[in-house]
Length: 136
Ligand code: PNS
Image (cartoon, rainbow, N blue to C red; front, top):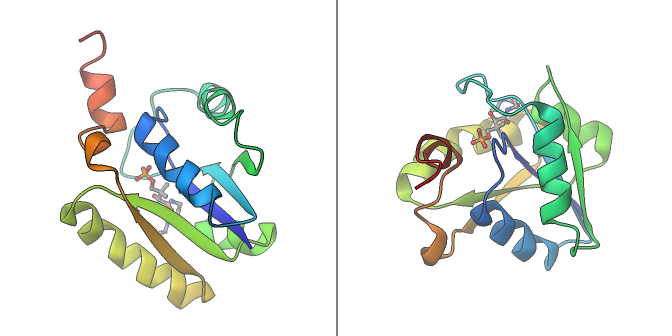
């Protein structure tokens, strides 16, 4: 089965890498797809996010990198033949935020979301905090 791991990846982190590594062991192919999160101001240009993702996943042969702007994740899934959505979850707060999206995505498309619990040693990492604490 082909899975998608969607996100802003602004920037991608060791936490994202751990999740995609584990997902790559479960599915035939995992596409890391950079999407727009309307609640976040973008910082890195798309080209830099994609380059970083490609570099980080270069040792994972069944992981590919893609992007999609201006449309819903479920439309991307339909066009790309994706059967499952993968998301990492660090905390119950993450799950509280993610569950309504998972419900809506399944309602719209029938596609389920698989949550991979973050490795506790990486659970403090967030793209937002990395940007605001850069250099420390
Ligand atoms: O890394 P993020 O910012 O937590 O990722 C959130 C993202 C990009 C996966 C989410 O905002 C998303 O799916 N955006 C695409 C538009 C969409 O499908 N929105 C409806 C979700 S119910």
